[in-house]
Amino acid sequence: MARTPPSHGGNMGSTPVRATRGRIMLKKIIQNQWVIMSISITSVLILLIFSFLILNIRPSEKIYVIHYKAITGIDLFGSWWNLYFLGIVALIIAVFHLFLAMFLWDRNRTLCYFLLFVTPFLEIIILLATICLISINK
Image (tube, rainbow, N blue to C red):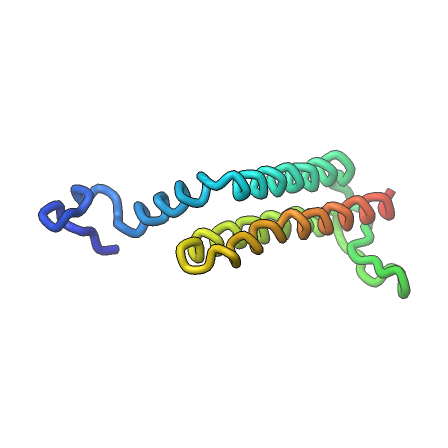
């Protein structure tokens, strides 16, 4: 990664310019109160998902229901650790939406707001799926 020399207005060559630009974008996006609210709600929901999983799903040799449909019933079984993919997917969605919003912040603010406000709703759906799978596996 190329560094801008100090003679050309660079940052003394200690931090790559790209990393500095990312920090500046993060500071810009975090200053918005709606973004803070969305990130806070999403973080709480992700913590709830992982806490439900950690408190209710223990490592064991038992076979767990991984996927359930209301019409056809159970269609996928797996190990205990397969249920933790719900939390991992929730975390990946949140991080991806945040990075995409940071990338698009100066170009399309409306799309950024949409991404950041859809994320908690997706996390609520994953939380409900987690609760349902935990209750099915009890």
